Each structure stands twice: as structure tokens, then as C-alpha cells.
Image (cartoon, rainbow, N blue to C red; front, side):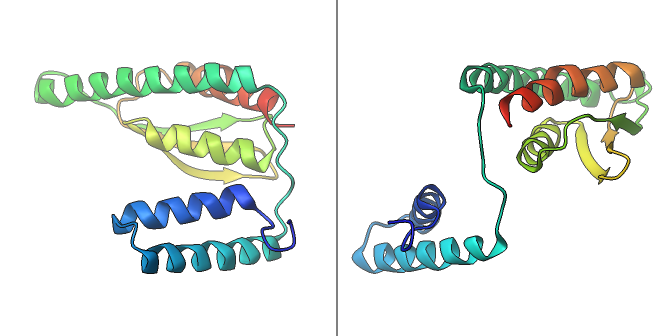
Length: 162
């Protein structure tokens, strides 16, 4: 089975994404999506990604709930900052964050979390120094951001991904 479908979950996700984007379940779209899913699955195998091992699924669920709550809270704070306009000084800036997290899947999830949170964006990651650079729209306390990223996200991700 692995010979024809080296990454069945990825292939299924590609097929589902293709069908959703085309908003069609016609046989032609199903066939084209299946071919695309197979070809991209084989292409992904050529990249030789490291094996994904999730150690703590319960913590993954907890982290997901935490991230959704933080995104909602950040949306509200950003909305408030925009509405206040000139009545309040908004200082944006860059925050370098030292990370212990080295797992490529954990770093990818952390990048998604940081970028999905309104008011923050992942700028760069220096793998040799393990320094993450983020940009924060409303930077009040740099140490608070360092603690938030390392304690709320990076440490749980380190426990989730082996």
C-alpha cells in the first residue's frame, strides 16, 4: 500500500482540498484530484521528510484550544487598538526569541500559530543560534512576548513532537 500511497493522509488532504477549491464532486474533478494527490504524494516522498511522531495527543488538543482562544483575544485587542486610533500610542517592533524547540514539525506549527495570531508575524529563524524573530504590531513588553511564545507554545510543542 505504501508503494502506491507513500503518504495516504497527505494524499487524502490534497484530494479533499482540490474538491473543496473546485466546489465539485464531478467524476472528472475526482479523477483529476486523485491523480494530483498521487503525483504530489510521490513528489513529497522524494523530499524525504523526517518521520512525524506525535508523543502527546492530549496536549495537542489542549494547545489547539489555547491557540484558538489566544487568536480570538488577539483579534479583539487588535480591533480595540485600531478603533482607539490616535488616542493611544501604538509601538510596533521586533522581538528576538531564543528557542529550545528544534523539531521541524514543531517549528512549522509554531510559525502557523505566530502568523495566525493577529498583530504578530514570524519574520525569521536562525537555526544555528535558535533565535526566532517576530514582529509585533502593539509591542508593550518584550519579555512578555518572549514568555508567551516560549511557555505557551514552544514548550508544549516540544513535548508534542518527538
